[in-house]
Image (cartoon, rainbow, N blue to C red; front, side, top):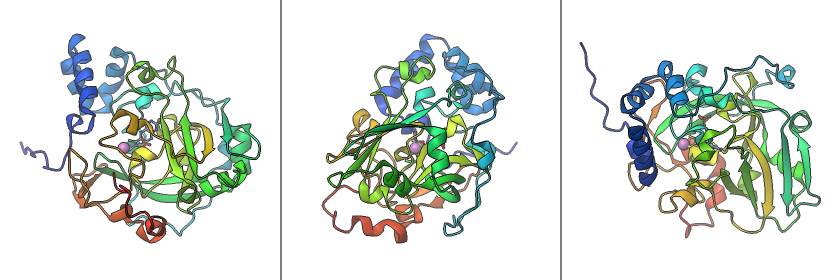
Length: 334
Ligand SMILES: Nc1nc2c(c(=O)[nH]1)N[C@H]1C(S)=C(S)[C@@H](COP(=O)(O)O)O[C@H]1N2
Ligand SMILES: [Mo]
């Protein structure tokens, strides 16, 4: 039998999970006598549902209800964004996820089906002309939908290429009508530990929060995702509304959004609060600035055993480098 040794750049979960959390999880698995099952879950989706259920993370099967915006898809592709790499298989993008609300491992797709994505509303507050809460379907139908094929680079050194559908974040900022003093957008994911069993892990600072500057939010590359692969985006990928900031590490692309707060203070974020020595505000992709515990020079495209070089700003320097020219004193790349 041909046995392939693990490439030296391949990271296992020990390397990418914040150390105290990793230990806690191992302890949990061990306490439950599930060490072997944990190994099986890591091996493939066939075992994942069983693993999820044992850890209390199981969810119902996908429901058959039709998404109320399904008629909008597919939307026209904007060809200005060419990914340089082949599109990742949909099956991989929908079964290998980071969504800590449903567990701190990759096989959360089944558990995430429990998320009720209708009714769903989104609130705009803080420094806006008028605070308001809007129904997601009203919002989606008010926005100029298009498809963009974007690269995505996780801080854990894997990457993917996804045809997202959605609308420029600039259109959302327009819609929210921030006042002139607003300098940042703080974004929040839903909070519902009854459904999202990961949120019962109280050592995490729920809800998941992220933030960008107004300049970043209105850069043409910043994109809000409502669909993928020509249909409404699935729960595990952040339905019904998630961010895509392809020049930043993946953790900035916050999922299942419920709130946009405009503010003049730089917001903290979920990962800054979990491990502020490892994750910063800017988190722009840079192969020359290693993570505290691993190199960022290379990445593994999902579905391959290839090792390819990571590019500055994940290859989007032309679009976004200008945002950072006056910020040399800041830690832009972690
Ligand atoms: N609310 C929320 N958003 C999140 C995360 C998360 O755990 N919770 N994980 C982030 C990380 S680390 C990555 S790499 C991407 C993964 O997106 P995907 O599962 O659709 O590939 O989502 C980001 N957005
Ligand atoms: Mo990530």
